[in-house]
Length: 164
Image 1 (cartoon, rainbow, N blue to C red):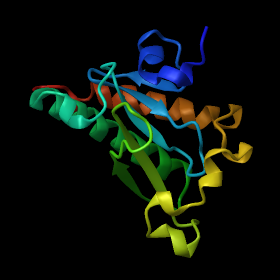
Image 2: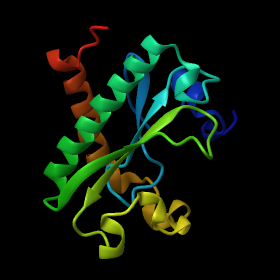
Image 3: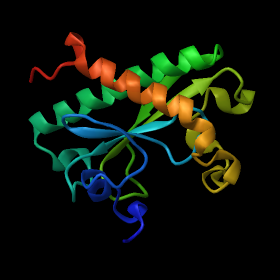
Image 4: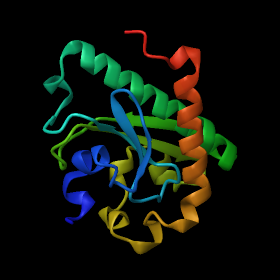
């Protein structure tokens, strides 16, 4: 079996991506491989080969973005309960490194360094992606469970049901 990281979309579809929090109608809610900002999550496309948002039809884009909204709402809700210094959520679709559609959902906190707290996450040192201190681990199990439960709860809520 190859490493699930080599094809995150197909591994999620096959049930082999261990970062999946929940399967939504048009995406997978996944927790980030790194957690230097606890609660970092993503909306991962369910369509193999889709590289950018515009690879989807307009209707599919709107549905995917509705899933992004749901995941961002879940991250905000959970992270604000876990940490009283929670400030906000930043959502980004970049696609400059990984050639598959995914949206980053970054929680932001008051304890971040003053020179970073109001700036894009990408200004943090690139070392954070490889630093073992920030790797997703069993230490994140409670956060992960809470995120998964909140995504599932919101998915069932009337205001988040797909009516498109």
